[in-house]
Length: 155
Image 1 (cartoon, rainbow, N blue to C red):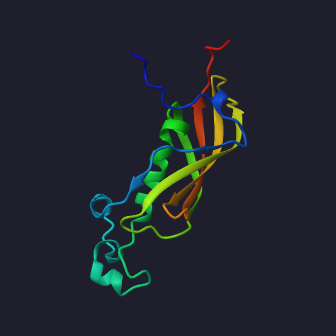
Image 2: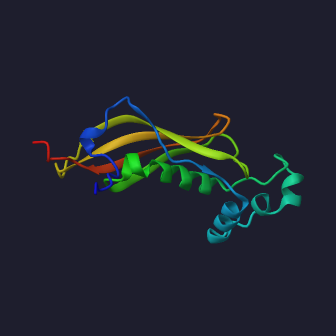
Image 3: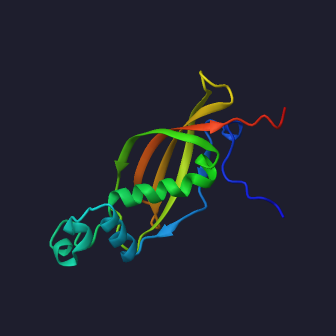
């Protein structure tokens, strides 16, 4: 039996490459409701159809941090599966609304990388991820630094 290979080593990341992540998810009403309850985000635009219909989008808006969490999750098999840590997220932008029934996808561009200054068995990979919906509309973007193991098995 072949073991699963989750994530990539530092050496596998090529600056300038874009990875189209294979994971995706359609957002169901139950996803949005559960996430709202778990995170104590009771804003009626996320949980009240009557309220939402009388506001800007005229329908339930999916919680933005749910969109963020899902898109981060889509990247794990390719970006952070061999990570030691996500060192920080930055420049998080909600670009378009996400609604119940939308399907989310993601792609990540490798912006830069460098070997760690304090420990040479790891490196820092800087990436930008964009989440988009079934219509190809970008809905979220963010950048992050990921501390990733180096691979010495090829030496």
